[in-house]
Amino acid sequence: SKFVGVLTVSDRAFNKEEGYTDKSGPELVSLLKNSFPDYTIETDLVPDDVDKIRSMLEKWIKSNFQLIFTTGGTGFSPRDVTPEAVDSLLDRKAPGLVTAMINFSLNITPHAMLSRPVAGIAKRTLILTLPGSPKAVKENFQAVLPALPHALNQLTQTSDSHNPQSKGTSKEQISNKGHTHGHCLCSAGTGDHGRGSKYRMVSVEEAQQLIKDSLPPPRLLTLPWEVSLTYTLAQDVIAQVPLPPFSASIMDGYAVRSEDGKGQRRVIGVIGAGKGSNQVVEKGTVIKITTGAPVPSGADAVVMVENTHLVEQTSTDEVVVEILDEKILAGQNIRPIGFDFRAGDIILTAGTRIGPAEIAVLAAGHVPTVQVYAPPVVAILSTGDELVSPGTNPNQWQVLDSNRPLLKSLLSEASNGRWKVIDLGIVADQSPLLVEKVESGLSVADVLVTSGGVSMGEFDLLKPLLEEKGNVLFGRVNMKPGKPLTVAKVMWGHGNESRSKLIFGLPGNPTSTFVTSHLFVLPCLRALESGSFGLRRISARLDQTIGGDKVRPEFVRVFVSWDESESRFVAKCVAGGHTASSNIRNCVSSNGLVKVDAAHDLYKD
Image (cartoon, rainbow, N blue to C red; front, side, top):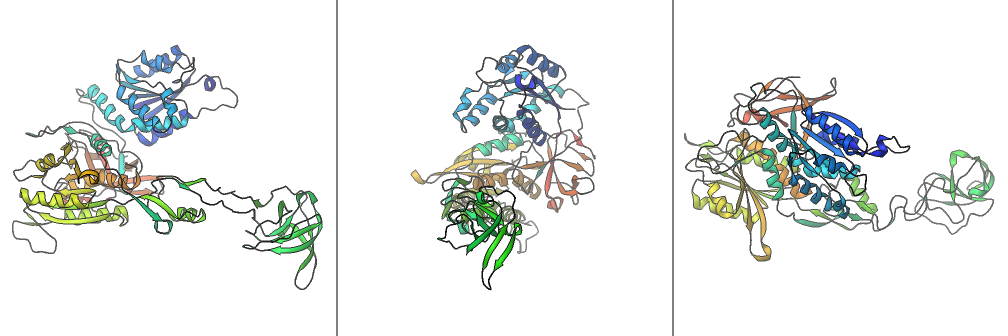
C-alpha cells in the first residue's frame, strides 16, 4: 500500500476554538483524492509545537509513508514553527519544489513572499509544508503537482529496485481523452537505453512539463459577443450596465408602502414591464404592477396578487383592493438596481469557456466585444517513401497513409471544428523535400505535427532537421507505444514578426500516433486556446487484468463507461487483433487510456 499523510498544524483547531473550523486540511485531502486515487490518505492534527509536529512526522516516516503534507504554521508569527520542525528531520532538501510554490503564489499575491515553505526527503518520505489557508493550499499543491509523480517514482525505484516482489497494483489511472481538466500521473523509469541514441529518455510527465514550459504565446482575438460561442476568454469581462437597471418587481401584484400594512387600498394605476409611471404611491394607495416592471416612486415593497382580495372594480379597472399580508417588509419582492450585477463588476473571468449561459451574461451586461484566445492553426504532415494517399492504388511495396486522416479527424473532434487544420500531404524521405515541407508548415501554423521519420533508421531524417531548425526538447519518451516521440521548439519569422512554434515528431506507427496525440498534442493545442494544459484523469474498475510491459510504462486503449449498478466507471480493453503499435484496430471504440507501470500488472477489480 502507498500512504500519504496530511498533518494540520493549528492551535485553534487543536484546541477546538469555538467558531473555528479547519478548512485547509479537508481541502488538501480532496486535492489528493483527485490526484492520487491509489494512495491511502491519513490525517492528523497537532498544535503549533515543534516537538508535537516532529513526533507525528517521525511516526509517519517510520511507517514508510511515501508523501507527507503539512498545512499551517509557515508564516511570521512566533507560533509559526512548522518549517523549523520539518527542517530538522530532512536528510536532503528540495529547493526546486520550494521555488515552484513561491513563484506560483507570487503570480497571484505579493503576500506569498511572507510564507516560509520547506520541502525535502526524510529517509524514503517526501515532505512539503503548505500554508494554512485553503486558497494557498490549493495554489501551492497545483504548483508542485506536475513534479510529484516523478519524484515519488524515483523514491520508490530507489526503495524497490532490488525487490523481486515489487510487482502488482490494484488501482488504475485513466486519462480520458475527451476532456481537458486534471493531471496524468506517469512513471519516470528509463528502461531501454536505445542503442546509439544520443537523447536522454524522459518520463511522460517530464515530457508534458517540457511542452507546457515551451508553449508558444497564445494569439488573441477581439470578437463581437454574438459570435464568441465556444471560445475561451483571455481577459475578465466588465459589465457596462447594472442589472436590473432600475428597481424591478419580481412578482405580479401591487406596489405598496410597507408602513401602511394590511387593509383596503385605492388602486391608482397599472405599470407593465417595459413601461414607467410618473404616479406616486401615497398613503392609502397602491399601483398594480407586473413582473419585471419598474417600482414606482413612493412604493418600497410589492405584495403578490395571491395575497390580496379584489374589493371593487369597474368594467375596465380595479378600484379598491384589500392587502392581506400581516407583515410587509421594505424591499419585499423587489430587485434593486444592480441586484444581479453592477456596472463595473467582473461578470465573467479569464479562462471561462463561452457557452449559452455566458452569451446571456454578455448580452445582459451590454458588452460589445470580448477578447478571446484564437483557436490554434495546426499543420499535419506524413513522412515516408512507402506512403500513398487514401483513394489511390498502392503498388506492392507501398501502404495507404492512415495517420493524416487520423490526425485530421482527431483534431476536428477534439475542437468541435474550431482548430484550423492544414494538410501538407506526404513527403518522401529526402532531406530537401522534408525541409521545404517543414518550412511551409511553420510559415502558416502555430504547431506542426508530423508522423514518421523520428526513429533510428537510415531514412529517419526529421530529428537532424529539428536540431538544425531549433531546440529539441526531447527525443525519446519512456512509454509504450510512442518511445521515439520528438518535440522541438523553433523561432520562426523575422524581427518583431518572430514567434516561437512547436513541432511534434510523432512515431509513424498509427497506434503510436494515436496515443502520443492524446497525451501530448491535444493538451498543447487546448492550452493555446484556453491557457490551461492538462488531461482529465479518473479512476475506474478494470473488467480484466492487464499485464504490463517489462521495461516501459504502457498506455492501453480502453472504453470507459459509467455503470449505474456500481455507481462508478468501468474500463474495458478494446484491442482488436494483435496489440503491436502498427495495428490501429486496437484503438477502435476507445475513449480513454490506462497507464500500466513497467513490470507491473493491473488487476481486475
